[in-house]
Image (cartoon, rainbow, N blue to C red; front, side, top):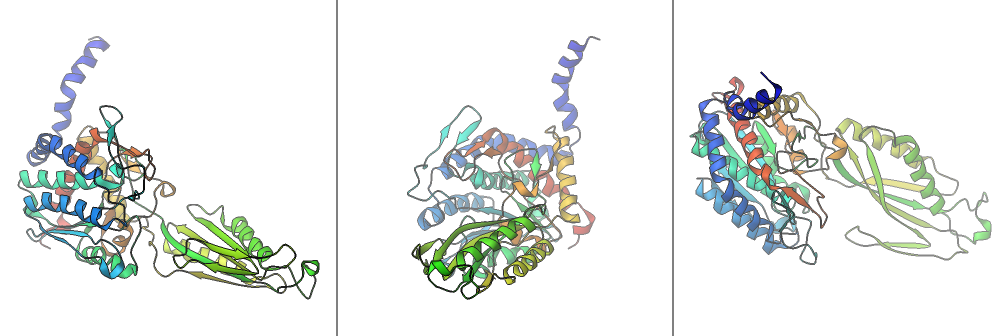
Length: 438
């Protein structure tokens, strides 16, 4: 047989061969998703054309209502919560109580980074398969994938075999305060669940999922020097001043910690002079000083991202030591904000989910799946669930590019692909012995 004939045979029969790896119920899942793909894409177009920048509460609630209606049709008990207590729009919580067994929390979010003053407000098609739209990848595409997967499980008669809570937060892009109230619904759902599945889009590639995310916390460095005429700087009586001390500290941070794998720390802004005033929201401020006066005050605000609590704690200890080794006539204080996004550390459970998801992808004929490098996946809501469940994974959403920019795109031909992977993953998890009878 010639190579050409062999290739023709493979093209004709390979889809059937691959589908043979699926059982009857999994084939029903595939069939349902194929049938409902068009409606799902129409839902996506509606969602992205509603502005839901985090601080546009009305728009966030409108997107919440859109997905609430879809989940109501599938028999979920749904609620749009109030976010008044933490200064945000609130969340969409959807609950389906099935037979004892697998309990899942599915994580999405309703808000985007594009507020009402953004020039990026509507969708367009780059070509037949790529949509350019605000929030299409991060993460309205993921929300659509959740609803399409739920429809498929219902059509296959499998939804009642598991219990599911869907939490679509309204403040993932700009968390409300206090954080313990903002994330309470998500944490409570995670404490109830066995498995957490996040539908962010990871690094934007369909062949990856996230089994580890770095956490994020904010820090503030406050430095005090001895004010004096500039002619006396560097003397034993006056010392180096606050700005030089702040510079020393930042330089040592860079020298001692920048080679630590997966650790980053970024000074977002610095103010220094005779006096410094910070804005209440911590986004900047003003400084006053003269060129002939040794500066008395310096303030630096920044963030730090680590892949585990242990890595974060070690980094904090190093930073605090550096801060304590002051230049003459200066003092410094380093503080870390309470809260922030905790790290989602790689675990045996997340590795097990990757293994299963990869197997499903290959059974469907979609190729292998591998883990995203944590450096390429920012902080996300899944991090608030990971320490409360046996297994967690993220990045099950829509592949695309240029998140958080006016060039954001999503590969809409992958909506059905991702929904098939996710729905079959949930089904196979429901058959695992460790979840049966729970």
